[in-house]
Length: 251
Ligand SMILES: Nc1ncnc2c1ncn2[C@@H]1O[C@H](COP(=O)(O)OP(=O)(O)OP(=O)(O)O)[C@@H](O)[C@H]1O
Image 1 (cartoon, rainbow, N blue to C red):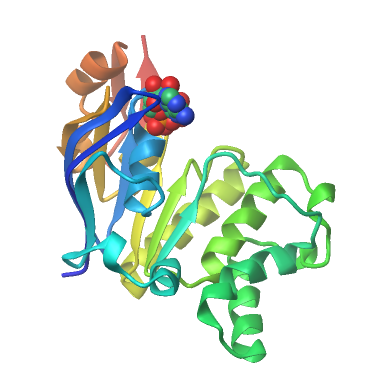
Image 2 (cartoon, helix red, strand yellow):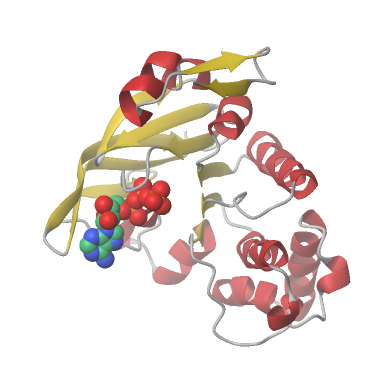
């Protein structure tokens, strides 16, 4: 089994405990959603799983190997990370931005072009390939940043709120892409999601974080049941509709 795992992961930021003893085994071929209230530690956990946050204690392993012991290029090829705040330092065009995802591969120009083209197609960005990023809308820029991740053809996709600024159609296309990547290509997909209905309908598994700890972990219908919504988010809410097409009625 291909697995990305954290064991006893503890992270403090500016002297405050943000994650405390997080044990989680994330599996390839699944879409795992990480959910929880603001400040619960979701982004910190995702960054730690991507090897970008050094824990105070505990380890993150990829197929039982500590991430810290892996070659940097191998790690960059394997773990594709999309941060929450999509800053782009240079005013480059979309194809060049996506091409940055190819750097760890040191592959031929033809291979790089094919991977970039596939990423742009997956995100409906072909028409924007030559457009500079300063001339994109917020949602187009978010898709361009994700194209950089997909162009790297990672074995794991770790994306922090990838649907946040997308319109309905692009969000649905992207969710379908993630599900296909998991099912057909064996990729491990880990998404931080605030939209609990997206998590409920499209994730195979949901981890709920609250105050730096995992408080629910399982199939969406279990991990996001109404008792958890009440305890963790403090809201009275009901799931409507059928599994796979649930909507949340709050109040
Ligand atoms: N650089 C920092 N220094 C100190 N505390 C920080 C720092 N960055 C984040 N935190 C705190 O760590 C906690 C977890 O932050 P994190 O960004 O992981 O939460 P989150 O669950 O992703 O939140 P959100 O849903 O608001 O994006 C929060 O309480 C936050 O205030």
